[in-house]
Image (cartoon, rainbow over all chains, first blue to last red; front, side, top):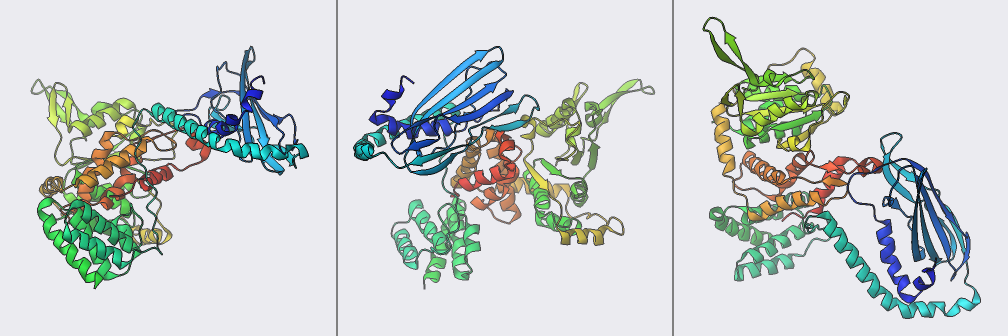
Length: 287
Length: 305
């Protein structure tokens, strides 16, 4: 606990979010280790705390194997607390390995809180099956702040800017490490192309896109025009023609959608005709 | 010349429901690949394969995979003829146009390898001679997901040889009633003479000429790459999956009478292409997540062009 005082400096609070995110993240996506888990428990040194005070939450795990670390251990979500510090002790003995993870937490809201049990996923050495071992939950009651702690919030506000900066750096570093561990370039993953039924783009958007395409025909203006037609049917970006066809019963718009598809994906020799048909059907729908 | 749609129609006359299975069979035929069918016993996996073979008029062979099967049982062997005092070749059931490998996971690895080598190379070696397998050559393999005791699961590298995998689900109540009505009085005749082997060769040639826009190609590649970074997936799909997506998308466009592929072609066949190519993290069992949901999430996460 020697590091505790140092951690209570300003940047510690800000780093806490990044540290907690890393602690709470599931272990690597590789296969699970086989472990004989003997004990997994969670205790708090104080269960009645005042705002401005702190307490220690200790997670104790004992496994029969000799391990150097227990990366599988996932600490509970402590969204209503600041993480001031984190200390891990690993002791190897004849009966196996004892791991103690001690979190120093500071409540930020008054009330009664139940901290869900920490858990670890492993292949159970007894049964050979993937199993989630879960520790007991811990309940903590947080009372109002002591009178002397009144200016504590001012100090927090002053440190918030610095904290945000450090947290951003921490998250960036964590993401970089995670990306390196994967060994493959990440793919740009967009949101699910859900139907946005009530947000059909107005005809004016299609009209503008059509005018832009007719003025300067290019693959970009064609894509913009097709996107406007898809949106007019009530679909979000990333949807397909079938999604749009399912979203509208307007026969002229449906014909325009089909023409847009042909104009976009047909082979070069067939595309010029398809583009003309697309423009014609789009004009027909706009009338 | 007949069309793939005619074969599709003939199969639908025989098989009640199972639209995805029937369409996948025809798509795989047009694409020139092989298909894995997984389903409980009695859901018309074998009947669908037999109906396809009958519709084409090609040679159909069924191999029931068992633990004591030997590679020579499927490829063939050399036998000594005492009359001529010479060895002659006896071809195994692999030398057919449509081969049904029933319960492929019940045979040991060396038999699976012999079959899969034939699927990949489209030829088989008997003794010192290498023989080309007939064209078209289509392997339809079935697996039962339940009786896993005493089976030999196919490794990912071998599963990758299959263009797609379809799940043959139980029929709906109405479909099951229709099955009882249709098959209660005995098995109806299978469709015959719907198409010829020459027709199939033409379809395969024409399907290969279907245009794939770079945007559609990139969409297929992005789907495969997304599978490698997906949650709960330990090993994603290989580059062969991207090829399979584009090949089947071409076949689908051809089946629908289009000369070009569209993103819907890729998205529709993506589950069949991806589901058997992913190795899942052990946490999928703990989370109780259906692997099909993981595949669906991968597909939903990649925007179509």
